[in-house]
Amino acid sequence: MKPGSIKLAVNELIELIDASKRPASEIINAYTRSRRYIGSKDRHAITEAVWENLRARPMPEWLKDLIPENEWLAMKEPAHTVLRANGDRSKIQKMLSDEGIETDLTPLSPWGLILKKRVNLSETKAYQKGQIEVQDEGSQLLALQTHIRPGDHVLDYCAGAGGKSLAFVQMMQNQGQIVAHDVSVISLKKLKTRAMRANAKIIQTTQHPSGIFDHVVVDAPCSGTGTWRRNPDAPFKLTQEQIKHYVQEQRKI
Image (tube, rainbow, N blue to C red; front, side):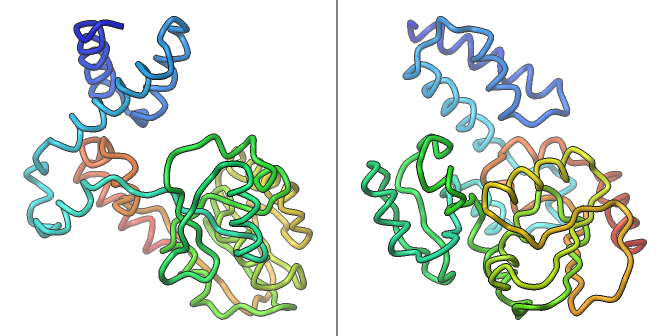
């Protein structure tokens, strides 16, 4: 594509993103899939230009009283893709390296691997064998702070697609029971698929949990500021009304 055509595509995507409540990543993917003539280099150029445009936007006025300027600037920095090694981290790092995928070790999590560049993980042996999961280092550290042990009975409330549940399986050495709850049937289906791939045998999914648990972990619906480095469009889709709703939901939960 010519530079002018790329600019037109970027402008068109920005308009689509601003007019929709859907995440920008979904809109970009749908846009490029429906235009097969756009080559991989041009897709990359268009995507990066869209992200750059979104990151350059000033903070919405109503957020200025809630988020310090230095935090806002930090949130605009692109995030690394971090993996959780489900097993011996050194061996899994070497397995990825043998497939041409280079990683660095996370500084804090004993499980984490930082991708040096974006790759299609779904085609790797480590992914197909359930030996890696995409999970931010902060989420890995949160799981470790629960001090869950093998044989425990755990309720993962608002589990979503199960990132933390799968981390708990690793901590529990596949011994005990994890009850993963979410109101979304789609999320629970994704969790089941991920659990099968990771050979996680102790996860039970439900929308109506009951019983007595050694640990109850709640990841309640929230503003999602922790994802803004990956989703720079998110701050501009968030509203004050949504914040109030999240607070009410969190209190109820």
